[in-house]
Length: 115
Image 1 (cartoon, rainbow, N blue to C red):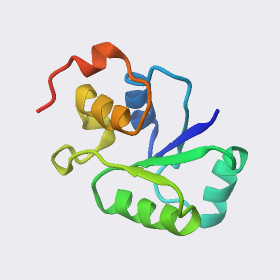
Image 2 (cartoon, rainbow, N blue to C red; image 1 turned 45 degrees about the horizontal axis):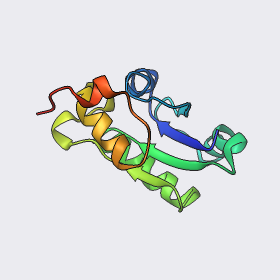
Image 3 (cartoon, helix red, strand yellow; image 1 turned 60 degrees about the horizontal axis):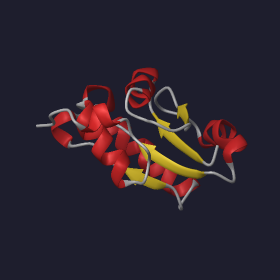
Image 4 (cartoon, rainbow, N blue to C red; image 1 turned 90 degrees about the horizontal axis):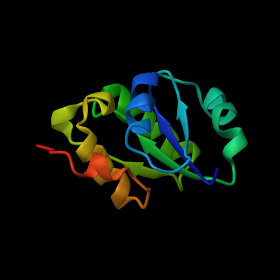
């Protein structure tokens, strides 16, 4: 895998799998994580491009700050604040966010309506 997306939870991972149309490793932090655990989680993906898609809340912002310190070259992707959670973001909007970051997305997801 040459791309890795870090998300907070399993439901975020499942949501992304509905949209992605290419093999991408999706790593779940399961919420708050120590720096050491974060390094272990992504150790196998050292040569990969790292992307972060976290919720638009305090826990997601904390994770982003931590990843910025540990992996300054990581790419940060954002959902709209109105959706708050990646798992609650409409598929069409997720597809747009991912397509803008040069991921291949399923055409059915792009065709949906995003508010």
